[in-house]
Amino acid sequence: MPRVRRSPATRQKKKKILKIAKGAFGKRGNVFRRAKETVQRALVYAYRDRRNKKRMFRSLWTVRLNAALRPYGFSYSKFIGQLKKANIALNRKMLSELAINDPQIFAKLVKTVN
Image (cartoon, rainbow, N blue to C red; front, side):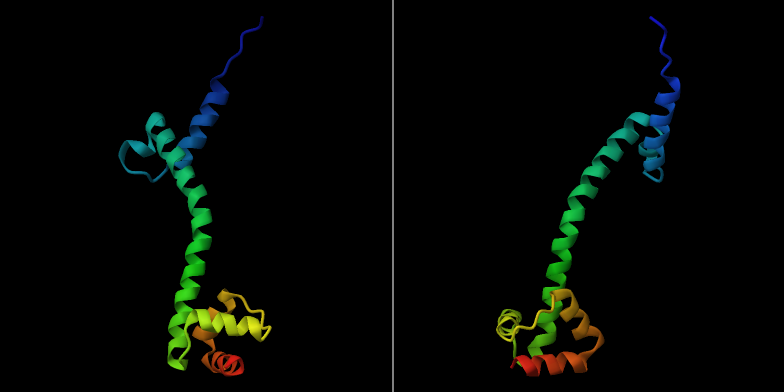
């Protein structure tokens, strides 16, 4: 059976992990065993937060819309219900952008729904 030399593969694996962990505090950035733990945990957080990001942005748009609708005497839930009745298909992101960047058009939309 021929001898298998694993050093190139091991070195590449270690370099990959240490490159990802670069910038971590103390030994977490330059000791392989600590860096591996740090990278594993970071990847778990990244996976989780890619999903949480979608939730967070939707709630942000909801809060912005609610704040923009209060001067018109609307609450967020009533406004969304009226939009559905009027068959206006705008998502919350676009409604939020309209409320912030183009208040005149947003006011017209609110009057249309009302």
